[in-house]
Amino acid sequence: MSSAYTHGHHASVLSAHQWRTVDNSAAYLTGHLRAGLSILDVGCGPGTITAGLAERVAPGPVVAADSAETVLDEARRNTAGLDNIDFAVADVHALDYADGTFDVVHAHQVLQHVADPVQALREMRRVTRAGGVVAARDADFGAMIWYPDPPGMDAWLPIYYKVARGNGGEPDAGRRLVSWARAAGFTGVTASSSSWCYSTPEEREWWSESWGGRMIRSAIADQAVAGGHATREELQRVYAGWKEWAAAEDGWYSVTHGEIICRA
Image (cartoon, rainbow, N blue to C red; front, side, top):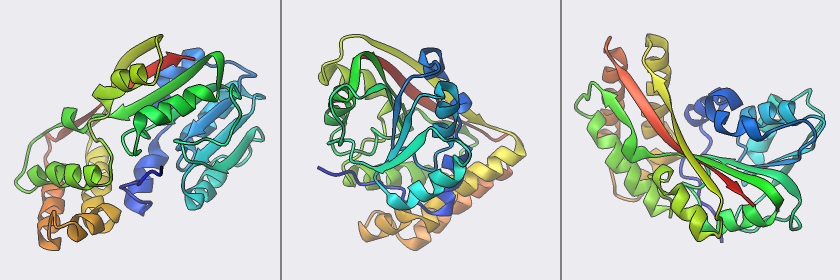
């Protein structure tokens, strides 16, 4: 069983991933971290969250794992100077670790993309020691809200849903995390939510280039066209809608996330 990462690793995607830190993307987990714990960071991407995790548990060992070897090169660069991190190519559906290897297994924006999120959580649980923590955080695209709503921008989310679900993913993952965890066999699940908000001129410009840019330049655009979900001209209109939103002085965007802490 494999995962299809819908977004790919275009610069428009990585710019958003590199912005993520423990403080803005894994604050719900920090109370469970202490020096000496071992962590598996599944779907580590460019490693900016991994770096913060490693700092908090040092000298405890951390494994930064991702399905793409190329992005691990970026993770190595972003964690340079931290000597408690190893790197591995991994499939979250079948992790190459013994039962009970880690104290904490963490996944940020991963379960929305995988073929079987319940199996992924089972594997995360299997490699976590008894009493340890499995933590996951995923955005919920259906809960994203923005203002204003220019013509053209309306179309981006329906197109993205078709592409992501065509790859076997579930963009509305945030609301499903508790359900998936229970199906994976967890009984001790603590749920929470948190959000990112973009409203300053600088934030709007960056966010519009990240998401609007993906709709014309990234793997999402290629898959949308190949799948018959949009033409290049329609994607250009989507991009124009994003830029119109970014230019609005009262522009505002909120990304809601579901979060779970599960006791193994």
